[in-house]
Image 1 (cartoon, rainbow, N blue to C red):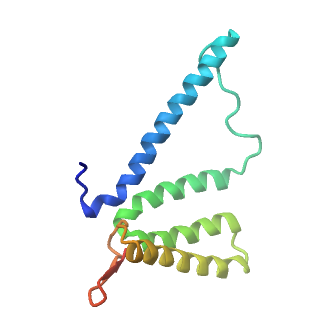
Image 2 (cartoon, rainbow, N blue to C red; image 1 turned 45 degrees about the horizontal axis):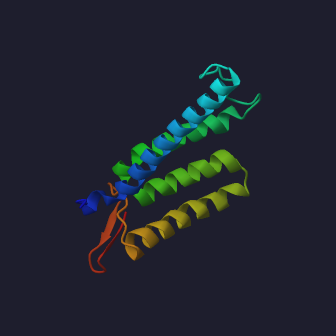
Image 3 (cartoon, one colour; image 1 turned 45 degrees about the vertical axis):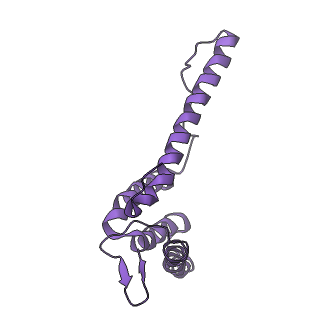
Length: 145
């Protein structure tokens, strides 16, 4: 039997997914390497270009930085606030700062994380990362993470 602590149960699925991905990566490396050996090539080959030429560096590195920042900020500020900020930043990165896209980005960044927080945190009773900006409604018995 697995003993699960309620406050950390939201880390169960990501841990399982990481293990499955690691196993699948190992399977891919072995099968590709064996296929190369069968052809008479070395098990590990020098890889080709990782990036296509003229890739959008701003979007690639911006996405990487924002994603890492999102992960680090989740436990500090909580799910809802962090998601609102980072969804807005992602929208700015991909949609740009045109007059038409900013109001849409604001609406999306406010509404989507709030709906997800209520849906998962209240309706499905799934724990989400809480932090400085989590709000507890004691009279109603739920928390907006």
